[in-house]
Image 1 (cartoon, rainbow, N blue to C red):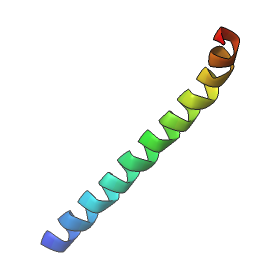
Image 2 (image 1 turned 135 degrees about the vertical axis):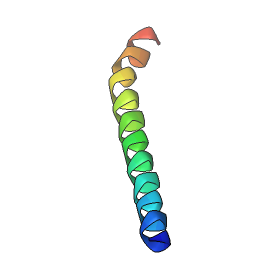
Image 3 (image 1 turned 90 degrees about the vertical axis):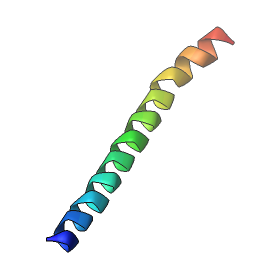
Image 4 (image 1 turned 180 degrees about the vertical axis):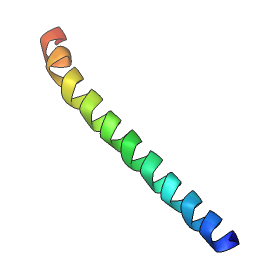
Length: 39
């Protein structure tokens, strides 16, 4: 049970990191034309 909990915690951390990276990439992709327009 401890191994299962540790594995799920690692999977959750990996999932959160992946989602955060995905959101950052999309935010940079959408804010890039706006930054180019401001400059």
